[in-house]
Image (tube, rainbow over all chains, first blue to last red; front, side, top):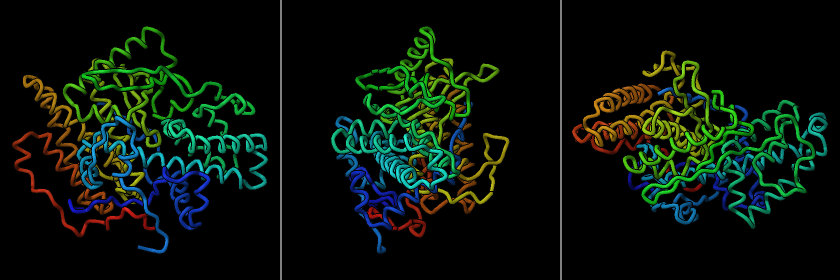
Length: 57
Length: 408
């Protein structure tokens, strides 16, 4: 990544711009990918889900 | 670019859509990424990550609604038609908020523990259990005709607490001291019960003092903490009386802590836990490490070896600690303790960063991030070390193709 790059790589669609009722208008594959992404992460988290950062400074 | 792709508004757009007065400045996504990696993303970094949280949580709600509507017959019986119908009505109500009352919609999604609730429901539905769907009422400001059909055990008290506001040098911080309601036990420590007047007064004074410390001596952290941390869950101290604090991966916007001895310690705790929260939100946008391979690494601050993700979390939070202590030392040069602490945590974090960079667990962008953290650690070593630091710029081969379009 260099200063000339103006973007960050993410595959999480910015759904703030999309109404719930309009999500169905997305191509099935796009919506399915997005939902699978968040559900898979919820069901099989790649990071420690909670309470992982207990601190005692 | 592949067949399925969709444009997403870049963070610049997110800034334009940001809350009035949020103080966000326009910076390119890469500048923001670097600033976040350096622990100084400020309000603009928070706005970027907040937009990611809104998107993720919206999708969680959609996924949950889809699961409930399509529940298999056996599980449908467990959910119950009354709860399923209620959930559908609330979902449609919320979709109306999204169109007509966006601030209400965002308040719902950004309740810190909304993510925990949705995830637990998905997990329970996935295993044929009914899921605590009516828990949505804990977060949503529902009209009377939409209250849950029944109050399941443990849901009689909505997420809530004391609404506090602090101000220093014109900078305000609004915070909910969440001493009641569900989901306060997700931090791994025992939460307090509802605070009495004396404890509430002590917390208010402590937070007021901590805000003063942040605004006066750590303004970049004050900007970010003030924008991101909306909730503090008070915890009981450890059995030996020592203070504890925590952040949870699925509670963006919340930190948890017992009441430390003084305002500086509380300010430090807020910075430390905020950085955990911030890194979790960043990893919701871009994976910085690969799925856990089982590899474990030495963490200089712990006796037990840690997975890469936990090591990354630790070194990032300790960047904040080193930075904080360095600034404390600059503010009070006679304070040898802060100088020692800055050196200690800078050394630990740098060692952890080099450990990760020497391994294969980081994604390319995770390597970029960790390299930027390492560079920022030099900042907390003072101007001499910064001058010794290598020039910016890293091999281009490590860079993942930059996309503001979403490539599926």
